[in-house]
Length: 232
Image 1 (tube, one colour):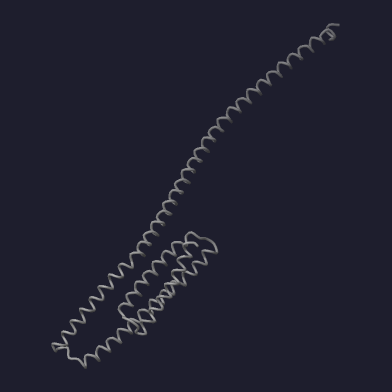
Image 2 (spheres, rainbow, N blue to C red):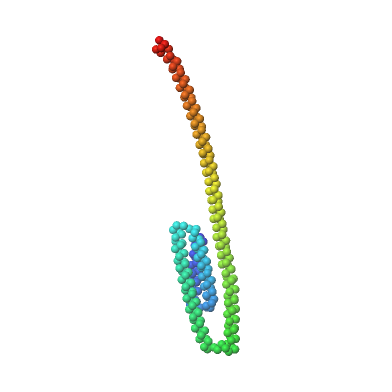
């Protein structure tokens, strides 16, 4: 399976988990802060996967690339929908918590010593829970971070290989250009030599023909001399 197919599979699974968490947040199941933190983390991961997906598109061409681009646009639309749904769910939860808090304030006097102590303990407990949750999230994000670093290193190796291939092609083109120039210089030199040789041969042939012509012309004149009317 190619990298882009792995990204597709991971993105689809991640979107399902995000939608499930949003439904839990809207239904008031579990701690709203914890669920909101998980959704935010998953949305960030989905955005990173989508960026990696777009990077892998450059390795394809033709109809296959068009299909992947169309799928990428659908993923962008789906991610925007999940982000908007998460924002609306958080706003609804905040309104509900605010309304419930006002109802509790009517029945409890926060100015009493007991009320202040209870409120302080509640704040301390929430702080401890939040600290524990942050520590857990840091530990959980270690593996994705390590995997992301590996993916970045792989992409770096691919880019370095591409640059090396381009350098090799440029070197071969320069060598080919140099060979062509040498060949043309030799061809021009050989052409001049062949022209001079042909001229010499032609001159030699003309000289031979001229000598033969003069020789036969002289013999014919000598043979016909006694038979001329003047001699008779």
